[in-house]
Image (tube, rainbow, N blue to C red; front, side):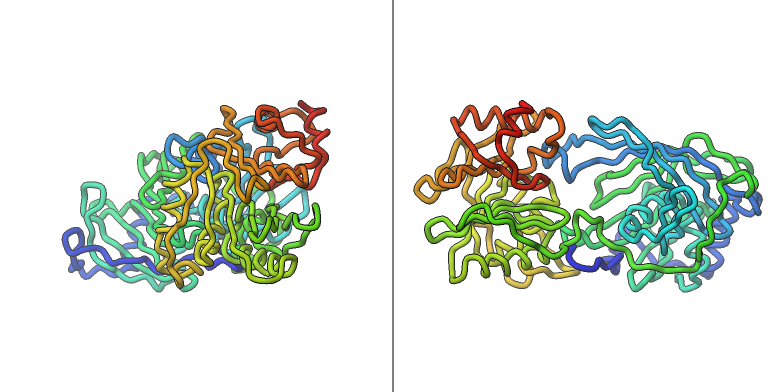
Length: 481
């Protein structure tokens, strides 16, 4: 995703005739939605607010130590209050992440699905940069989804489709210009899943499904005890509803003065936003390119430009390209060194492939990078989709000398850094540490492994930088090590 994010898009393809058929019941979409609302029993708790505790596990596929399962998970314990009358969901959370303490987020998140705010004490401010995550979390609650569909009044019956062993009624609507499908069980009226297509910064577009199952009784209403978010058929989020009850409004936190009818455009998380890029000179022919999200390194070695990593996406790559043309004018072949495969770190690869760059990376990276390059961006064509080129890949299995030894790539190869590379430019005594030094306040596993790899390769850096660390004296690493 680049620039301002399009929130959703039309569903890519209509269901096949083998799995779907025309609905001939004569029941309107409005009537089906009213039946779903009645089945969940929301009106039997009219005037009350749902107070709940839930735990959500998120598969961190975009930043695990491999690009294939198993992925590590982040677990979020959430305490929340949902008001069916206004559609406002207020929640606070604690996240357990590898090495993290599980402390509170420090703020309450408020969302209606069309607008999101952050509340700290009595201060409330709009928070468009967390709205995508807020919308995804809210859609795990089918009461919120059905409420939104009922208020929209634009839904139509799309047919009947076979899903999870049974025939379902499928309703269709457009939300902010994008298509959605809601699957209801015709036997009982209960909602089964929401399906839509979303843009993605690495894969172009993805099919997203919210599945609700394991229904339980909460007061006089019914809610799913388990909800799931699937992306291209793979489970990314699993949410389990724990303690829940309907309470009076004065038992919930006081609602701040906000406009629940407000709609605001979503923004990418700050680390993915292609904000303006600036440079840091390391030497005459070596610069760092950085913005709020990521640093990269670029060097002119002999007559070839070497770019170390391509983050954030097409728009960031275009900004980098403009800087490269400014600091190293004239035509030069370009070699892109991909040092690790976290998805935001490789989101610009497709742009440079479209420009004819050679990609150098660890041998274990080939399959994933082939998948990134071969993916068709049918909904929002990027530079590569408009000018298809194959991946020209050079593998690194051991230390690889390029440009006559003026650029040397070394595997880091610690237990937490298998498959990752670091780049050494001997003339500047500069080490590009990839993503594998992030914290200079205390010793870390990553820092130890980079230092060990440098020692193993008999390097003696003066300075280094990494995607999240500015230009720094190597003595800092030695002191921490």
